Image (cartoon, rainbow, N blue to C red; front, top):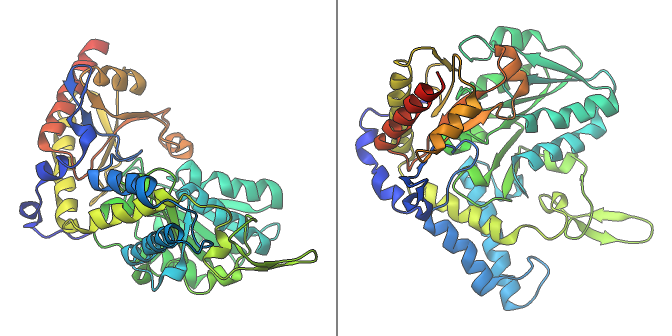
Length: 414
């Protein structure tokens, strides 16, 4: 991720912050400092209004109606699909399947891919994966005898690429790895991981839940991956809407994983003719307002100078980590160059949960625990960390308030 040296001057985080109603509130009689963005980001007024407008003025079920409201809803819904395709760098909207989020998108691929797998076939994961990119593959291990192999993580938080390549055998069918770690902030070399997988005849899925928010140059076509997933609620959009990108003819080749309305062309007593992709994978009434809200969130993000936003977030991370390094007994977990705007750490003699709860008394919201990444915690011999994660609307003042609250919390505990 290369950032222009002047990018910071192109972006005004205070103007952006003013677009988020929730950031004007107080928590425990203190201004809210929201640093739990890796879990879920707050929503700008433009997204809130886009969702509310659907409910107020143009809600109807999509695709099957012939009346004006149905046509309006369908146009906005499919418009969000086109926006999503362009946002990801996909060749066309046909490659985008709407899901409830990244978790459902990964489950969709796992369930659909399962039909082609035999006992002893292999799937490669990494030690830094979120549980949503682990548990669906364990289903296949439990139910079909699939073998899971693990890419180790170095002490600094990088994937061991030599070990990764050594894991492949003629039985390797799929790789599923994070584009950016939700704990370490590590940005993995997506194109190189893809090239290695394809050289060994394996497909690759990238979990873009964090990368889609923070990387200014996301382009799935340039990466060359087979599958890419992301979730809307981390991208300043609503809960309940995310997407799966599938390259080439994958959506034609995979079998549907849920049945019902919309995903069929014809049903009889003796059989089913499935709808063409992507609707083949969108059974039932979708989250209409949320998907339209996702489209609004993409519009909002695209209106920013994304390189400047990335530079701003990187500056916040540097400011935070500089302060963290001055605190005795504190260890930062994840130290790769050009990492995303996530700082995870532990403090000797202080439990992460206690630190987070005490910091909340000063209005500072951080995440504490295992972050749905048990294998990564086990790799570092930890039960959890404190995680501060930064977004476009965070400011230097937020970082300073975070560090001050942390120091106070530590002084109370130790």
